[in-house]
Image (cartoon, rainbow, N blue to C red; front, side, top):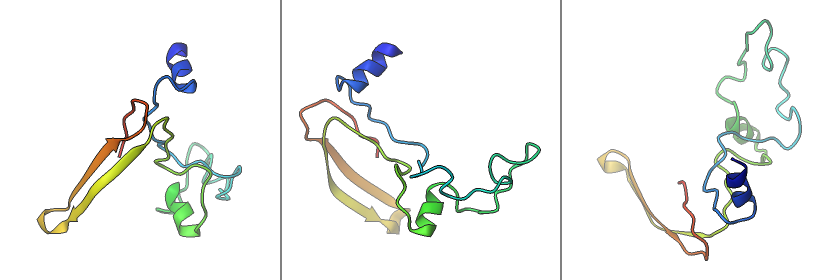
Length: 108
């Protein structure tokens, strides 16, 4: 594990991953109540309904420190041929090419 992390940190291997959550700019930026987080008596009240995580930032027009899906790479990628065809069941196609000097993969 330590060897793998060292290779990523020193740029020997491209991490090729994306964040599964949104990171705030400051602690409790969303102003959670005690009922929302961490909860009371092992019960959490999601009073914000669907405006959780990145949706809260979108609804309040605030840029988070690191958004859901954010990722860093040691190489560069070119995206071409973006097409969207909703007439046949929501088909999306995209060509991704590594145009950088280092091996890496992109998660789209």
